Length: 239
Length: 236
Image 1 (cartoon, rainbow over the protein chains, first blue to last red):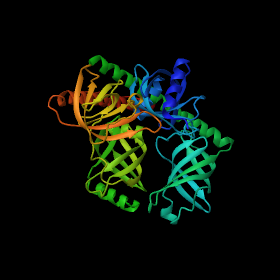
Image 2: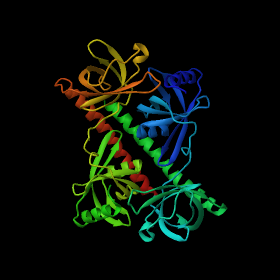
Image 3: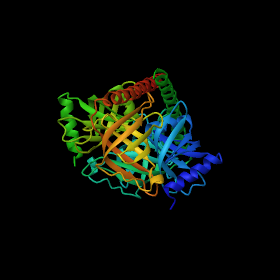
Image 4: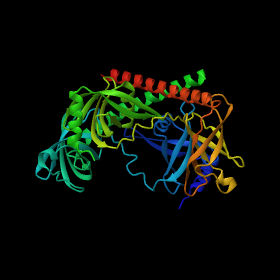
């Protein structure tokens, strides 16, 4: 197994050979993944030169994932200091986080407000609300068991969604398959995670909506960066 | 375990009596807790009027904790929609999380720059880096076993901690008791938690540093609120 201190040796190699790694975070469902330079490796920690948006995510999350083709696994690391104006972060506690990035690079946006939808499970059609949307998946919340007693859907169940997406409110019909069901015990509210199989029409509408929300969130991230930078520079000047 | 019907009933009672709740979030180590007013309840969703800082935290974290003395326990809730401009949030998926959340509200700040510390037990002196600091405790990372073979510091041991204070470059010596030792498997890295003993000499500068960092972080939070609100206003 790739052990902790070997990781530091490997990072030192990246620093010596000027080979960048990729840091992976998320900002409100949007993957934020940029290359980062290993500046110096010290006692149990390493300083990275990072992208401005990454510096915001590291400040807020306090952690990141690191990827490089020469690393046998993705690493997870904790941020102990992030300097937003300098775009530098000191990371420590490097641990293996598996060989695949899973869904970390998948854009999953939250609507500004939950979108009303219908989900057809077997013979029943239940009202639900969309709480996150990606190009090939939906997260929905339903109180359907109030009406039918039993949700009637488990992992692998085939479902059909009907909803409209802002701003055009063109109807979208989407086939899907349940991948997760979460709900507190005795609760009539369930959250379903579904893999979806959009046809060409739905694909275009989803693409448009996800791109629109992503642009809005990236603009917000850019503004948050500018604000954090300005505030940190201000406090450096005053101290 | 709280049932959904009970939760809805409890919120219904608070709405009827016009009792506010307290929402609890965290922004970069600073607990953010403010009163929030219930606006409406509908089919498992509860709309709240919230404080501006809470709106930012809920936007960024996607969740919050809800507390009120009339509720049997603190509820964790998922924020499905937050309007920073109107300061309204819609919460759902309420789950009981006991009553310990919100009890430990100490401000624990992270330094801006990597900050050197030394831990000393009267015999050995090992170097480390500050992970976080509050007025009652510090978290320290140390790689010392790379040099010394074993850490030798144990839980409950009394130690001195010399911190090169980032704001002044002076070294402050704190005295405390080790409360936790976490070892990262396969590495020489340890994380120590130390509870500080009260000290009239070091308490004022420590309080000043924690307050200064807290002010900086809260100013940043306020600025982010203004940025988000302006951005939203522009899009309307």
